[in-house]
Image (cartoon, rainbow, N blue to C red; front, side):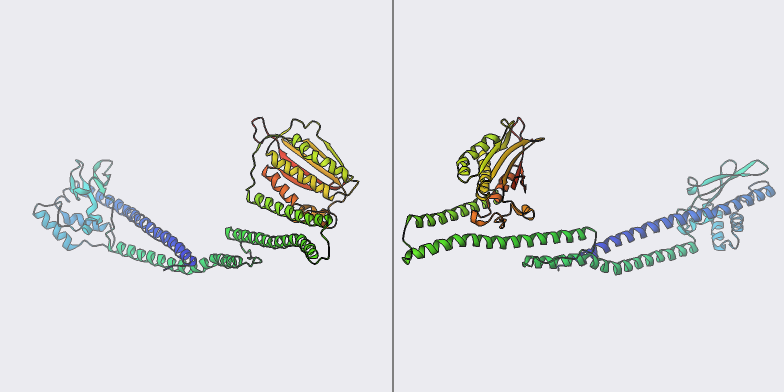
Length: 484
């Protein structure tokens, strides 16, 4: 049989409470027994003092202990006189007398344990020679001895062995009632605990039920599911984390749908152009000319670039892009990337400036091919989107263990609201850098993945030249070839 967490929690709390109550009951009972026994022994001290005074007075009148020797009746009467209202047990006195007459006094046998625990049997009387007059020899070692005096002269010794177990019927009845009270109190506490733990467990499990239901909704694809945070403990924190997870999944699902729609759009446009051109050729509407073939080729190349970018981006997201890192001179890589673009920039009427003074010996722990791909993508991006007559400035500067490479071009720029999204897949700032210039909005996403694979960071800002400014930060390397 499988129990729910509510009942498991109830049983766990109730079990813990039961253990605590039982331990408290046992300890309380043990403490009460010891405390009550100490109290009973302390109550006997005044009686012992009264017995001591009585013996001293009687000894003063008799002049010796002869009146008690071999006279148990007289001894028991003196003991009885020290406890008002108590009369000597005639049967007990008769038994002691018989034992005396049989030469068996002090008695060694015939006394029940209850009789032996009586005050009368635990009292010991010695003469000045430490000879036992009355009392059981078995109590000599445990008895507390005090002197008996008459006119500043020691006339004997009186001792009392402390009780180690209760014997009085009234005391035993009192202890019995107290134990019963302890049991009833413990049982009542357990009942109250049982009544309190179930609602408490239900209250504690309620947020878990809510989370369970919300998790099922989330697993079913209802990403708008949220839970109420009504607690500030760990369960409340778990509810908050669940809401964050649901928000993230909702955003990812929205991004996935947008991604699918954007990819479909990007693929559909060149395919539609290709289909239209091919159908026109099939219907003899257009003739096969070099211009027609160039148009078809351009659309095929556009599709090829798009598919290649998607492939590289998917590899980058999966961490499948290979990186062969080594100490790399970043200025050499930049110059190698810039050289093929110099003529292309001139053809479009763009100025390409670079400044790497003082950076010639700066090294990065990086993959040369991936850095070349990074800088080539950024150069291609500026070439596509910068208006004719504009410029691109590339420079590098070194900070504390950081190398920063700046790409700053001229207009058109990117609205400030679009800057944080510039590295999102398929995102293009349509108002200033539109599709007519080419590209599917994947280049900067690939660049971001390459930079982050080198423990770097890329950010976008407004360029002082009126266009887009990209800053790429890389950690510098130490002489060992490891990132600093």
